[in-house]
Image (cartoon, rainbow, N blue to C red; front, top):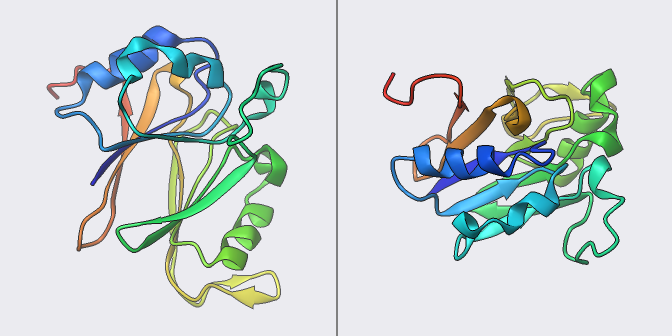
Length: 174
């Protein structure tokens, strides 16, 4: 299963369309991490399965669909994913609150945006988090800001998950 992960498009619909064009094959699922929910109405997305969460800049949309909330936790291919924009956990000030939430829901991965900086960080099982510890390895992944041309991908199969960062500013043939 191939997932495209984007966040913080802030009106750059052409960047979202370009990311889709650059994929070797159409993703099985688009994960949108907030701040640009309005951008998801482009024709290139029709028929593409989508999961999205609300960002702090999306809170002002008058017609925000009920299904978009601050976070979503779900399983794909036996892999437990927590999605959030990150603002409810003050990620610009540190990752502690986000790590504690990941431990609460026993996530394998947390996907978040808000900082506009790409990040991939893995914590081994047994890492102390608040008063508890992680029962399994945890990956924190931020695709960066699509507004600045940054996005992420995740490949899930029977093996280990494979995260990657991409950039619209690099030649896709590199």
